[in-house]
Length: 413
Image 1 (cartoon, helix red, strand yellow):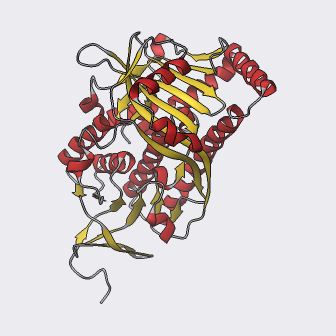
Image 2 (image 1 turned 90 degrees about the vertical axis):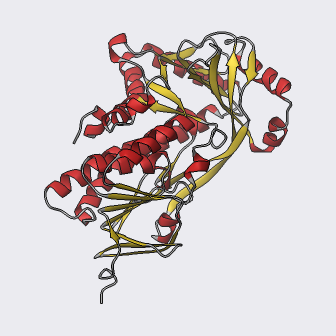
Image 3 (image 1 turned 180 degrees about the vertical axis):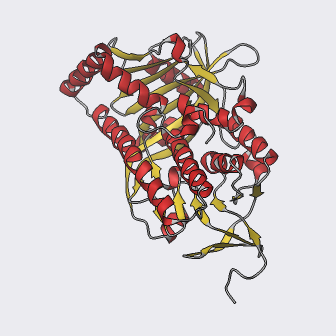
């Protein structure tokens, strides 16, 4: 008897990992009548709690159109802060690069607190026919071969599918089990995360201030219920200095933040617990294998210097959804090697170029000394004055470069 002859739950696609990218993919596929099971070891009662994830994410305009197209956007109405302008500067130099789209082009993206994204995705996923959520559930055994995919859970339940998606994040066990090699290194930096209230309104401006120790980002959030102005801080420091910085009393931490901000937003007050995580880079040599595709951080992890982390994962979602939907409409199996090869071609160059660009910027702005600083400031000024080059950078910030999948255009497939 074939192992696939035994009674079990059957789906077109099985997704391992139900984070921001994995759950979005499940929703996108189910919206297009593809049956999906999302398996995630995390308990949703914990992941949706206010204390679970204090971070915020920038959702670029193209991925935002996708969230609207698959029904998630309506649950986020009024929760995101439009990013009207991105200001990039070397230290507190007056020479800066300003990305300001024309009024008719709309916002560059939206800033959301991660909890709001999780709540919207969870509520949407629970309402969609054809999407099964197995949470918390841990895979005990995963088997892939030319005939299909079988996942046995720790409680003994078995699910079968035609395609397995690895969406478990940077330490993806699915990627490791497939023997997919990755390029990986550490930046020896730590990102400190906090939400702040500040005296002056941010005007929808996202600031990326580069210091030798790393970038200091101020990302606009919607005003609080009492009208206080709020932003998210992503403050990069040398790993060796991180314990001391994280151990500072709030008053000292706030004073240091104000100093690095040059007082541009006035007095600052910490309004969330502080957290941190180490920064690193990884990029998979390939993102497919026999009946397997990788998405999000399982495929690539980049420096948060340009706020493209989750957006790179959303580009994966849009491309893979289009490949699978079009293939299945032609009668193809979702795990067909031809479809996976198309996904590999579509995403490999784009994800590599974004990863290489962010790594290059990180290293360029980390060079100490007066000469590198002068070159950086000259470069920022030159890009500010060169319209076509500036437009190219703005398109990248929006997630609108390369061949855009239909979902990133806001269109159903």
